[in-house]
Image: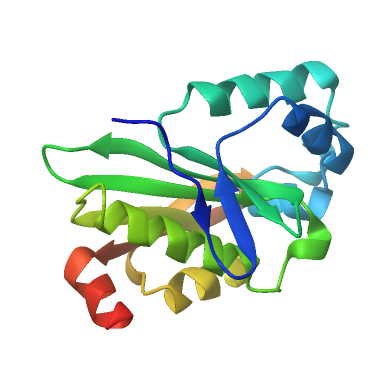
Length: 182
């Protein structure tokens, strides 16, 4: 596939990673409340090191379908299409907002919609799936707002803060998204 396009909305801009993102990611560090939404127990949250930030950056650079999320010209997170399968025209999506001040402002939802337009348009995908921890209500609301529907629950998949938690599987089909966009 050709070089990843820059996707621009009213609140966010999605672009390929650049070297300055290492320092921006390092500056945001690891927030325990955000890490919990990714399935990390509070006692396992440690300060982000430069080496880890560089590793994160390299992984994003090596990924064929990953964007940095910017808002007001500042780095706030990432969004990716994983396990892209052009034969079956499907992929999974992963979103990470690392800046606590950016949560609850609709930035993640806009980033998701931009990627959905690209995935169902230029990439010609038919289906996108996403997994989210059942207690991550904010993310579930954002996905539902973008058209994802709950397709199932995988019980006790993550051991976080001393307790088992379920994963919610959600999906969105091409024709469902097109109906929302009409």
